[in-house]
Image 1 (cartoon, rainbow, N blue to C red):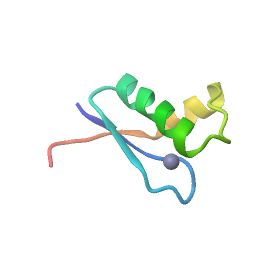
Image 2: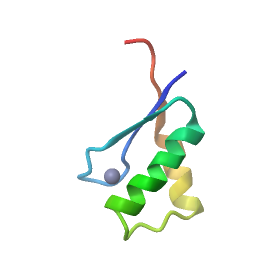
Image 3: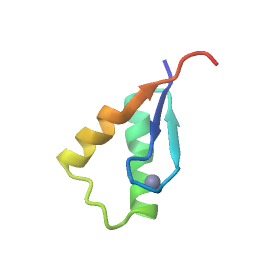
Length: 59
Ligand SMILES: [Zn+2]
């Protein structure tokens, strides 16, 4: 089932889609590096990102 993450940074309205959690996380890393260079993507940040990934059903 496809996955979607609404960026966890307040005020950022980016959404990141992927077919798997790994794909979403890889794209999150790119997004964070480009748009939120101040955010350190440590284990805690990764955990909260992972917790915010949602399944995308048929729409
Ligand atoms: Zn963002």
